Length: 138
Image 1 (cartoon, rainbow, N blue to C red):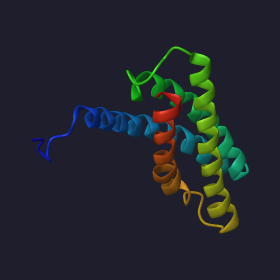
Image 2 (image 1 turned 180 degrees about the vertical axis):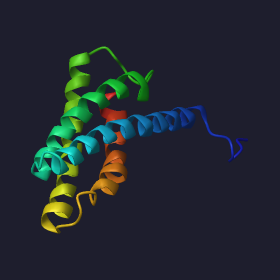
Image 3 (image 1 turned 90 degrees about the vertical axis):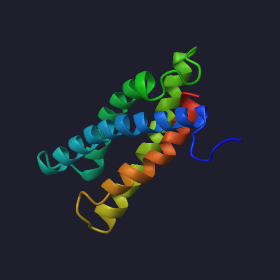
């Protein structure tokens, strides 16, 4: 009989991936937010343009960290082109969703430029983790 307090090996692997993903995604998110914030405040860029530039920097950072650390040992690594192109598609989904948060909260509702941060840091990453785990690195 299995004890309810003991995690299965499969769940421990998933938990490890989720923790590594959170750390890696946090780093990539800091890159994105840093570039975005600096672009708006220092360079006076349009918020969506600044978010786009930040996204590109974060996507490059995220791919390297996620492929080498977050999902290490998970799935196949036999087709780098397929994996990279799928990561790019998932990143575009993430970008579109986060751009929507920026548009809706900053440009439409005229909230402070930090208003999208909770959504970009907590809502979008859950969807992206799932897509990365099952489709990109699975």
